[in-house]
Length: 125
Image (cartoon, rainbow, N blue to C red; front, side):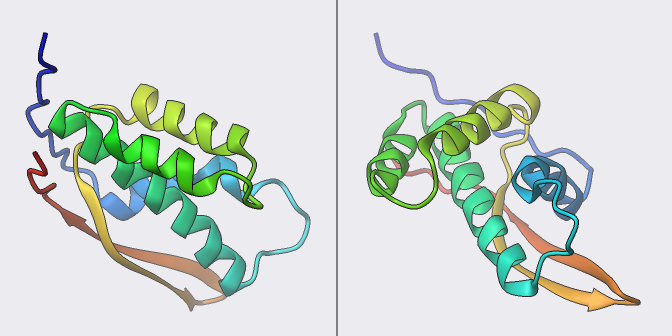
């Protein structure tokens, strides 16, 4: 039986807000504020997981998540963290099929700000 592709869904909420909420578990609860480099690393992990799940969902397969898992084998990022983020995307943000395009962080009034671009996922298959 062929897998059914999901009809893309695009909520009205700003993708930067959704992306930050999604990435929240990766920030930890350290007493020290993260550096820009640490934030960028965290957001790159979240970005990769988010977009992999979106591409697989809209194309009705698991090709991108499988590749993500394969590429992270033996890396510094524990597989449990990635698996948790995959589950988080599917369970809490499963109806949001926007891809995250370019993003950047900047500091304004002593606080980190995130700008992120939402993109429609391309048909891969």
